[in-house]
Length: 636
Image (tube, rainbow, N blue to C red):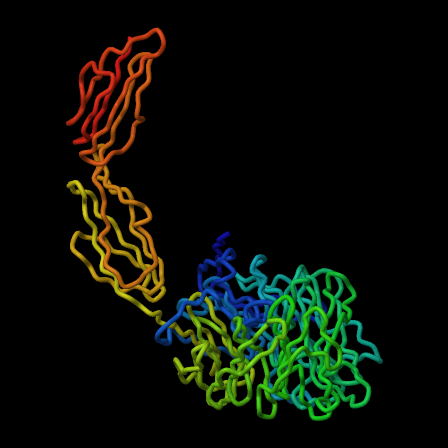
């Protein structure tokens, strides 16, 4: 469905029907905007790292030979910690000022902007490194429902996190509700001033999932929490608390909960304070979905040295799991050790199927990984590491290349390349997926977070820096086709049109009988239309075999041959039949015709019109298609 949404170019202040409601400021920039709700999944990037497996891989992205900056947005009102999301031709960006923007993916122009309320002044928090603190997590988009779900940290009327459901097309708030765990108790407290909602949101089977951890510095008493609410805004907020004595964050370096094929959730936790009795800090947890409340622990894994990881603040949960297949998943954390786990039996303490050191620096890996079998890309703190994963009978992995020594953000894979941000020096990189060769780099400017990530859609790469969004347009490898057309049998039809793609853009031109060289994207689709060609006012056409008029671009010379044809009309007058039926024949073709009288009746004659036709009394004869012909068999 394509909806045309009319936006009024004014600012609207809307008071929402909740006792703690934020004042929401909405600005619509354009007077008319068309939003696509029916875009194919391969075109969209509606959640952190594209899908609920958190693969970070765009399979539809074309290969390329060069990259250029396509556009840069205007300056936004706050730092961007969230990954840009894309649906159709629209880019959704959230800021720490509690604003959500929709930008045109084509031009970067702001289509609408809404502010959800005053963010929290970092000075009122006992620790943390974000000021102000507003929307830190990556939202999630329900493409079918046209809804953006986003969590804002609000200053008033008291500190709290609020879930907003925003209309994707208009920017209007559909509903909002408090999303901090409502069932916290003295034994399982939720102190909002110590909790941070950094984890990307997840969406599955009609529920939105929101994860919590602690602030940078681990001040106060906090726990890892997961909250879930129905996408219609109705019903209770369901929660799960990691059963640690203290800490055990669900944060993932901005990564989000993973949803497996059964709808179960997979999260990794940070360190707890325990060093003697295991309490699910530094673990991978499989949780039941909110569709079957309550949310409960189904399975878990923890490294055998969990106590050391707890004591040294080496969060296993600095990244979330990545699903490798229906049977295997991968986990890595600050220690830099990668683990392959049995997805159907996580194995408990020390139950990994395979493990090996991947990153060799302190705080080894943080944020989302990227996976396109067999390559798994890990964001080590000294540059990305590319693993080649073997999921055979004895699953394992090997490091096949490493990127330059940079402070790597969460990578993605698009166009047979690994895209990554050096968050220290403010650079964007593209590396060859199989060799690690640097294909492209550019300066993007100041990056506010170690966990700055990219997204890809419709042949573009999107990244935020300097409170702006930048879109890069890779140029695809091209080849030259030499094309023309010919007319077999003479005549002067309307010329055909050649359709091709160059740099991802569809183009066309009218063919001539003289060869024309044209640059096209290698491997892209081309076609020639129409078929047949025609010339008004006569029963003639020029026809080519359909399979010869479409293909995949490569360096070649093609002459598209169109055969001159005339139409044979076979008629009867009286009770009888004729063969063949009416139809098209090549110019000059010999066609045998036969008349058969019905029982009790007689054939009298043929009456022919046109050059090469027959007029006479033979029941069977041959005509020559030198023009359009009408043959009428007369019966009595």
